[in-house]
Length: 327
Ligand SMILES: Nc1nc2c(ncn2[C@@H]2O[C@H](COP(=O)(O)OP(=O)(O)O)[C@@H](O)[C@H]2O)c(=O)[nH]1
Ligand SMILES: [Mg+2]
Image (cartoon, rainbow, N blue to C red; front, side, top):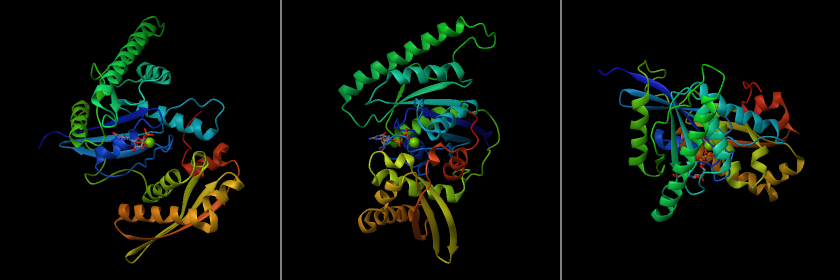
């Protein structure tokens, strides 16, 4: 049998770049929740992905964004994202090819290059979304910004007085890798490319493991996904889901969960007129839970107000699993 290889692939990029979608596409199943709104992902999500003799361990992360003036929730999310740099064997920096490379990307990508010990691959995502002619222009601009950032970091680091840090991280490919998470052949190519980079070593997870996250966490996320999909612009960012009860009873799984909001008027919005909104959220969440668990689910949702949980260290740990980050 061929020698086993195993390593971590960090997925970094701005909110909405397509990180969670790409990880799910690589895994061939939905593990990380996805929505059209930015900042859906709040935690580091490990996804275990076998490619022949290699076990790729994807680390999906919250989108990196400027956090000054924002609640602790945002600061901890961004800190979580940066923290995966130290574990990675390859860092993928994702940019939406439709939106293009922004000034924030300059800053974030340069920080990646200056701090990553592992090679970096720039991935231009969502190639299916626009016409080929438009993509060509966007892609060229993206490649140009990427190279410019690299040259800048190279110049800055060569002048650095720190003897151990003289070079930016190596780029895995000269140009960004253009792909769509919707095209299986392009996803497979990415996996092959990443597998080549993984170090020799025993698999850290069983062959049929999908993640290290507890079942309850993944179920809470599937409920939270519906908040992002079914509530207006602002509300989902300050809402959390806590699974209070998870019990298998014969062929049925009984799940009780609390939707935590931080303002009284948000509670009314989640519940909706005569309970219509929370009913729709519960119904869609139940369907997605049943698909995930492969079992019939009985779901009960309770809506609770916990004022200002998004700025409390204790409550962020309890409701969003964001505890281990040093600020
Ligand atoms: N058409 C298309 N949409 C995509 C692709 N990747 C992501 N999206 C969409 O972009 C939005 C943000 O994706 P998500 O994975 O949540 O981004 P994240 O915040 O970086 O994790 C969602 O609406 C996705 O459906 C893609 O390859 N093609
Ligand atoms: Mg995400």
